[in-house]
Length: 95
Image 1 (cartoon, one colour):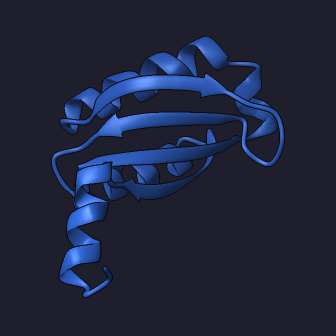
Image 2: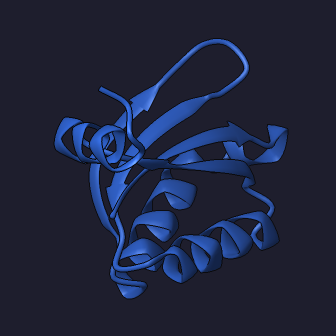
Image 3: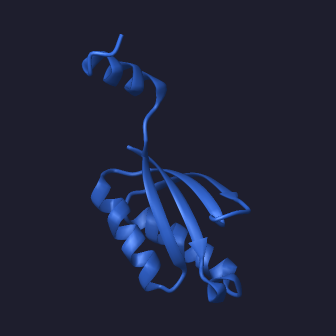
C-alpha cells in the first residue's frame, strides 16, 4: 500500500538534518517501508514523502518512532492509484 507522508520538522531536527534523514531511512527499511521519493516543501509541511508500506501498522510504528525521536510530526495519508478509484466508484454504484 502506498502512503503520502506529510512532515513538519521540529526546530531542533533542522540542526541534525543529515542524521535525522539517515536514521529515518534506516528505521523505514527495518519496518519494510520502501521510500519512493522525498520532496522538501514550503508551507505547513516541510517535506512530502511517497512510500510503499507492507501494512498500516508499519506506517503507524514509523510515525510513533519519528515523534519519539523528537524529529517532528508526520501526517499519513493512504494513496490510491487511478485503477483503485475507478473500481471503488463502480463498487460504490457511481456511474
